[in-house]
Length: 322
Figure 1 (cartoon, one colour):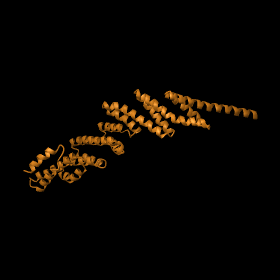
Figure 2 (cartoon, one colour; figure 1 turned 180 degrees about the horizontal axis):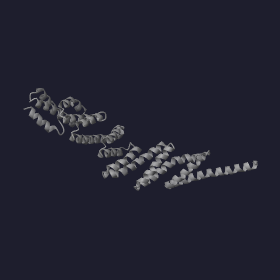
Figure 3 (cartoon, helix red, strand yellow; figure 1 turned 45 degrees about the vertical axis):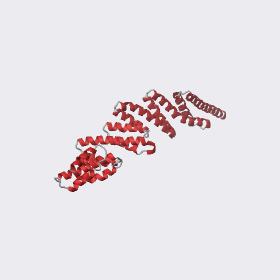
Figure 4 (spheres, one colour; figure 1 turned 90 degrees about the vertical axis):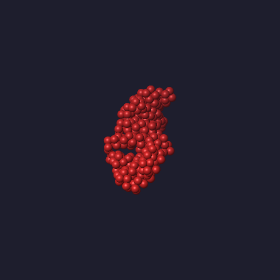
């Protein structure tokens, strides 16, 4: 019985040694495959190394396993890159997603970040085709996935926000623009400037449509939401809304605060024009007897020095100063 036990141990030892040799051999084959840029084969080989060697106590085998875990995300990424270069986006996304998942599984945060950055670029290119064709619904659905992979890809983030706004999803678009504006200014200055410009553009467009519908209270509510993230724009659209409601007392009350919040002479001038017009309306309503309102109108209109309101201000001043 003792002899049989010894024989069985010997057989197990041989089998164990054989398994170790197989793992090492597969690892070496995988390295050769990488060197030959045969990444698909390398993936299969490294997965075998990990599967068969992960429970080993042999240091050489464990070294192979740990190195295979590092190589595997790179192999998936390279297959994805190759597919992307051929515009096979479905395959590219599949392999790049797998690269990020495997990297996360094996605790390789650097490899995960790289895979997600490349994945986001693939989504950016794929979504860009729809975006350029003005198919904003398709573009948004693609950009959403890319943004989730890498929110620091500001070109794609801007396109996602624009797609939302073009689809009438104003709040969703503003949320993305706001996140861009909160990024480090020293690194993302150009993207922040673009986001700010687009926020103004799409807010003005929405305000115009609401004004056309006579929804001035809706504009005022929007201004309140914008106060924290875009105070200049918020003050501007709020005072314009009160002007639309012909609430001239409110326009006058908000005038100086709104003007002070603006960052350009053109915008300051547009505010002062509204304030001057509000005082002038009070003067006219008094039958031209309210001298204080006349003087206030003149003072405000003289501050209109730039922008589209200059000529109208001059004409109003000429009439007031007769």
